[in-house]
Length: 382
Image 1: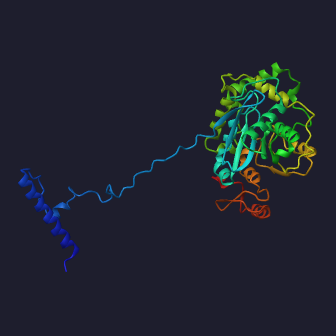
Image 2 (image 1 turned 90 degrees about the horizontal axis):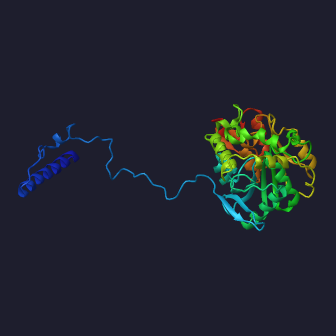
Image 3 (image 1 turned 60 degrees about the vertical axis):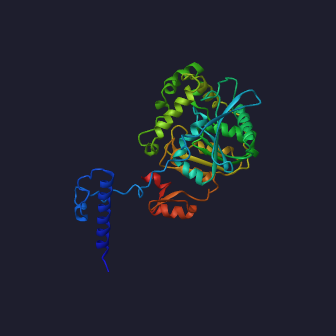
């Protein structure tokens, strides 16, 4: 029986002779080395590197069939009032509808600033909706409009997109608008979540005594430079989110310049004066569960405002207070807020041995107390 090496050598020898005879018949010169033996062919000069795969074995890189997202699209709708609403509707059509009400000085696209946990939001099947407020972003400014007009616009947008009830998350200056919605349409709210949210109750902000011109002068430089408006302390946890600050700066530029308004402070002054209004908001008919979130280091909307909210709510809310945050609790604990919005309020998001989990609250509390877990997704530990 011939060895495989002998058979391979004879076959190669035959092919070499055939090549020579063919060249002679066709009158083609034979390249030097065409009649080399098998041993000669194995010389380093003629041998291809073994590490280089053949063209047949190489896998061609795949080109995607669809575009990657550059963020949510802001849409527009002509309303029955004659106004044009600009809104965001991002997520599965059959997902749980969540109305995102951003802080003061934000556009409809501010919800994009929470996309650092987009995958979690998608896994929880949440549909994020946001309606832009008077004078910000694409929305024209009308000094005659108030919080009630925002509620009317929002309800009409929800009707247009086929949403009857929503779970509401309001951040910072979005608090008074959420309260207005809960007062005027309590039956449309399935859950109410208030994160570092300014209440429309209690003592008025100190700036309320200023005339509009003085307030505009105080705000002008911050509005003109989004880096100032969206400045976070050096120890803020948002600093660990890749691209977060740049996204915030882009959001600020959009809010105050999108329509060519060139950082006109008038819409911002108008909104902040709306925060000075008291009375007319009644939450007694709200039957939806309420969640309150606060950072103990918050000096913008201090933790003491939790009691202000609690005094006005008809039922005891779930209160989540965190020692590790200030006026960035809505971002640092967005993972827990998403879990709560999705109906997992009885669970706590924690990091255990490098893996993010969401066990029942009691189990999580034990792991946290003995140092075997940390609060929130493991992304915060990287």
